[in-house]
Image (tube, rainbow, N blue to C red; front, side):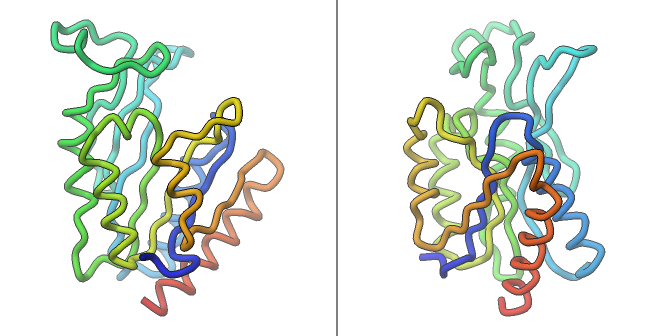
Length: 192
């Protein structure tokens, strides 16, 4: 079970800057502590002009693959689960993201952006997240805000985890939250 404070969760409404915050924290950590081994991934919007048409998963070493799309009309995509208007490419997500979630002795930190409905369509994803929590390696992750007061079961389990510290992001507190998360991570990583 993760020790108190070793699971740092960032939440907030869509497009508030959760991914941007996590990337900025990662960049600051890489600059200040270049020898820390960080594993994980983040998700990025795919746009055609001003319209968002999907998401891709990007590993911290730059590998990428599709996560979800509104434009994929391949025969196999008709069998994919949907979230809103997006078709979720579970096999592509697993191919890119799951290797990044393997616990290794020399890993100092895991970053997962995000643990949400699309990612949770993978039956292997949440067990990998739980394995990270059991490893006691610090985790920085983003989670969606509950919609209509209802939380996704896996997300609720993380939100209620005894080792979790939750930061709720809004446009007014982004810089302050970034500094608090960075400081907390540096303290955790120096003890790890």
